[in-house]
Image (tube, rainbow, N blue to C red; front, side, top):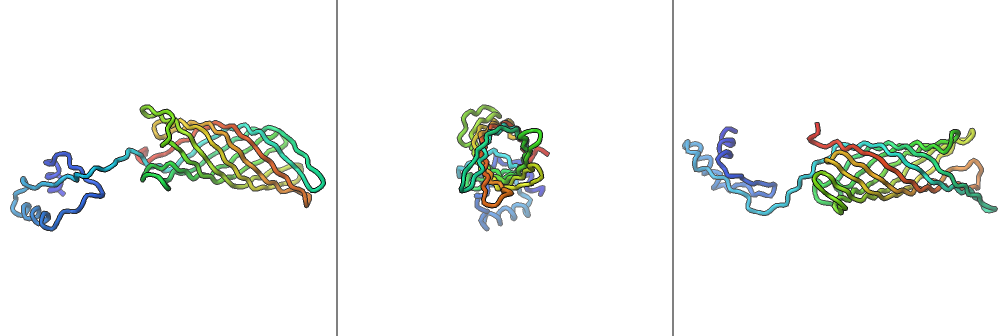
Length: 234
């Protein structure tokens, strides 16, 4: 170890990478013999002369966030004999927990996020419902709209699926929920994400009467804040 530290201090900005080939047996024997002879002044480590692309991305450990949304809903109840549609708005509070990954992009860039969310939606003082979703979000910072210093503004796209639960009178109903959305995110210092999204979601509710279908579609305008815990932060 002392030999390595000493000889490395004599080198001129050696540049090694994972693609650098190992020393040949001949060169290795020369280094070992030089050490045995006590002559370390002529030990020379060759630089990797290949041009390699380097990235300054930091890897994500965990992401958690909060989102506030206004939902504009349309609920349609129908069967073979007729249908009824009701329109109403609601307020949506959502908590998010996720992690960034690299799936089909450059190594360590991590633009893709898997996350889980739990939301509480208030229709009125008597009716509320909750939704648990699992989603995939693509942070398209490789298509940056504005980038300066540690600020980066870029588009996003997400897909979600999960289930919802609502209580009306004495009947508790659940439903399958599918959603998608797009938006803009402002990233600061790799840690903070301020975002605005437009989402669409559809829920197929169970209905207490057989043969009756209950579908709700929602358009949501949301703002929120995510915090990304990165390697090196702790």
